Structures are given as C-alpha cells and as structure tokens.
Length: 313
Image 1 (cartoon, one colour):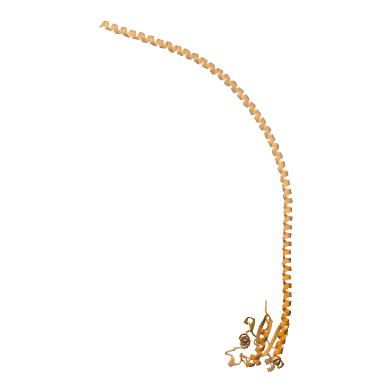
Image 2: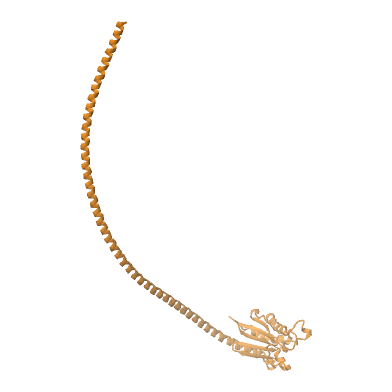
C-alpha cells in the first residue's frame, strides 16, 4: 500500500511538474507576445502622432485656404453688391425716365386717339349726312318722277274728265234744261246732282222708270272712265218721315242712305260697274243747298249727288 501511495504521489508530482513546465512555457510565449504587442503599440502610437501632426498641418492649411477663399468670396460679393447697387440705381433712373417718357407718349397717344375719334365721329357724321342727302336726293328724284307721272296722268285725267263732262252735258241736255239735273266740273272732279222726283216717288227709295233711263245714260258714260271713284250721296229735306213709312225708314238718315244704295245697286246690277269704285253715303238733311222754309227750297234739298273723283293711291 505504501508503495502504491508513493507511486501515485510520484505520478501526481510528475504531472504537476509537467503542467508547471507547460504553463511556464505558455507564460513565456504570452510575455513575448505581449512585448511584441507593446512594441507594435508604440509604433502605432508614433504613426498616430505623426498622422495627427500631418492632420493638424493639413487642417491649418485647409483652414487658411478656406479663410482666403472666404475673404476672396466676401470681397467678390462686396464688389458684386456694390455693382448691383449701382445697376439698381441706374435701372431706377432709367425706369423713372422711361415712366416719364411713357406718360408723355401716353398723353400724346391719348390726344391723338381723342383727335382720331373726333375725326372718325365727324367722318361718320358727314357720311351719315352724305347718305341722308343722297337718300333725300333720290327721294326728291322719285318725287319728281312721280310728279311728272302725276302731271301726265292729271293731264290725261283732265282730258277724260272733260270728255266725261261733255258726254254728260250732251246726253242729259233735256234734263239739264228742265233743271232736273245739274252738272258741275271742279278740276279733276265732276258732280252730277239729280232732284229726287225724277228718281224716286215721295218717301220711297225705289227707282222710277224715268229714273232708270237717266241712270242708264249716266252709267254708260261712267263705265268708260278708269281710275275714278264714284260716290253716291243721298240728301233729304228736314220734313220728318211720315208715320206710315217709319217702319222702314225711322228717320231721314235711313231714307237718304237707302236712296244712295239703290242708285249703286242699279249701277252694279244693270250697268255692271265695278263695286270697288262705288260708295254709298247718306247725309240726311244736314247739307242743304237751299232753305227748308219753302217748298222750292225743300225740293232742291231732296237730291242725289253722283260725285266722280280720282281714286286714292
């Protein structure tokens, strides 16, 4: 047992020695590495110091260069600002001068435009006057032509009126001599007046046989004239309508108008005169040609007028 213990102790001791040798060798290696690392660190510190010197020198150089650039740039900006200020002053001066010139030119332009507008207005006014004068001249020329035409027509109408008048005088000579018919001529107008007793019975509007013969003569003459209007006007005296006739003619208005209409119907139906040229008018007793105080005067007032006159254009 004792030997075994000694052997074990020997082995342990040997192992401890071996381990100590190993650890010592490792210590030596670690120390060498540490020395080497320290040397490297010293070299590195020297390089860092050198680099810091270079960086410091470069920084100083850069700072100096930047400062110089800043100074140069500030001088340039200062010069530019001074130049800009001078340019602004010149621009302001030029702008003021330009504004003055513009105002002066605007005033000249405004004056010119006002004069131009005035001239144009005057031209338009003169053109309007010229057009008006031209139109007036044309109208006067048309009127002159119309007047000349009317003069020719009037002369022709006068010839026709004269011929109609002469025909009436010739054909109604006996009635004129008996003072049953009166014929008058006024320039372009003829008036044929017939006393009512040769056309109508007392208080009636039916045409008598003798009256038809006279109207036939007058109608044939009227049929030969053109461009004339024929107005038939009935007149009465102031004696009121007899009671037995008032159912048909309440007053002299109705009687005078009915007699005028009867003459027109005869001309239209028997002579075939154009209805458009015929007019029927009743004047009752309000246009007397004599006094209604006597029988002779009332007989003259009871009449029918045939008036021939130019048609209205």
